[in-house]
Amino acid sequence: MIAHDVDEFWRVHVDSHAWEQVLHLGRKKEFKHGEVIINAGELVQELCYLQSGTVRMKRTSWDGAEKIIMHIEQNSLFSETPFFIKRPIRSYFSCYQDATVYFFSRETVETMLSQYPEIARDIIRTLSEKLSVLSNQSASLGLDSLDQRIIKFILLRYNSTPLYANEIISLGSLRMKDIASILGAHRATLYKSLKELEKAELIKMLPKNKVQILNIEGLSALAYE
Image (tube, rainbow, N blue to C red; front, side):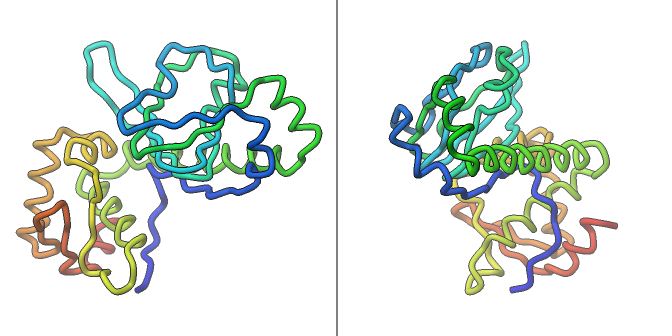
């Protein structure tokens, strides 16, 4: 399978194991799907390392509208920005797939930064990855049409699909509401755009939250037209 050049704009996949050597210094806690890990408005006093599972970062407006900002996948740090700037967080983190999280106090982090230089390097790397994701998201929301955003999302799923199944991609547990939030669209508008891509014989919507790719080259060409 040939991977198509698409910049990641919603998924953070650092997959760092540098923190495994310091897990004994943290406080371990298990979370189930839907549980809130860090609330909006909270002053974050502990740095969080996601050992397993997936965590979702979201923000809610005053009228209840929600925006999914990013998904953080296992073996990755999260909450580092509000932790270091020492201001209440405006977004919130919730468990998307059952997760194991380690919490590190400020005192412990200060000790680790001086004794474990690889931890400091990993924090810089993680922040850089997230800055890249958020920059790509901002650029896509401002410059791409909805169709282009949808196609890029499909291509990202295509790139992460095993070779033997590359014509059919799974949206996993993502609902249309979730995808619309990630892409900055209304669910009805998203559904309409997907039907237009079907009419153009570029994709085919399948049961069980799957999409069949009918013309991968056509999709790739439209993504950057």
